[in-house]
Image (tube, rainbow, N blue to C red; front, side):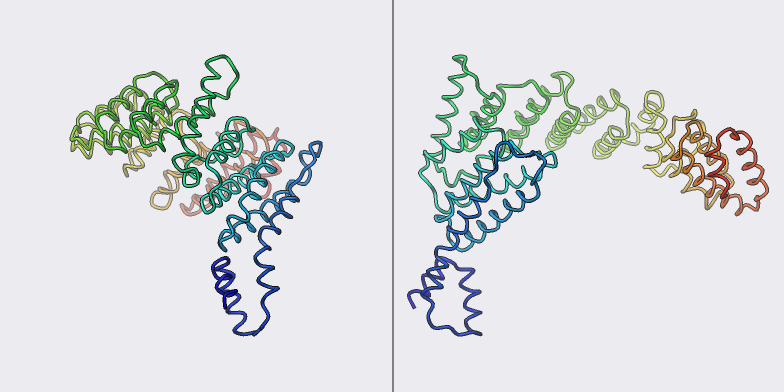
Length: 443
């Protein structure tokens, strides 16, 4: 009985499966089986980790799949052990696995990133084991900081996942180690600045002191993304006014990553709308659209102006600006999105060759050819001429596809003779292109 209770405590999942099995297949003497199960996870993991050794001079492109399979076996075995309450037995083995895979990545071509993903998952599994069976916090802190600051750059698993195992003492130890590295940098010793900065940010966030966290974030404001990080943190902690100020500072700091700038602008507009400053929010959107008149900025201006109730007044001027400063294809995209299909069609027809991409023309044609097929004959021929501005089999295949679609339209119009005349003229104009003539022979 006692053995059964011990088994349930140590291997709850496996014990349930075994109980179901024994109800169907009674077996009296379980001593050997219980002893085996208690040792199986730790011993099995050690054997699997031993299989992760890799010679330093091995071919980087050799054995990648086999090695990845062995890493997955370690992960699967470790997960089973943790589910069965064996964190203490396998924790150190998982750490060894992390170290071996980290070292092996220096000798493996992992351009696909699969091995890096496996290593990150293995690191998270080790963090779980540490959370269930914490090692001495100072020991874990020293190991983790060493992986971050002195390792090859992988795995970059957030300190947060180790926080339950580190506890306050371990987090303090991490902060002391990072500060020692910063002090060494100030004295001129080499240090991976990016790794130190990331660690200081993570540790400041975990400490729960918002002002200290913001102070760390604002030490380096060389990119738009840094302003975005500061403003986001302040907004998420209920300091909307401060977040708004930092968002404005970021947007006026100068050119930067357009993706980060877009997110920062979205954040600012959201804050302005929340405090009832709809007019200011529209002004932010309008300024961005005037600098870069494209469908994205037009759409965001429209969305914000509709919330402010002023879009009807702004739309004519916005369209005029898009027509004057934006690409013709942008105008067509916007008009199509607003269901102004007739205006979009007329705009495309009036455009110079090449101003409206072929894919956009095909979308316009598809909307029109069933109701007004006569209108699409000219655009189809225009697309064919655009394709024939280049040579090559890909272009000739595109021409053949367009001709098939054009023939169907002209047949529907009862103008098969007109299509035959056009096809003959096409062959005559391009008779010096034997590959094209051969492709058209099937039509």
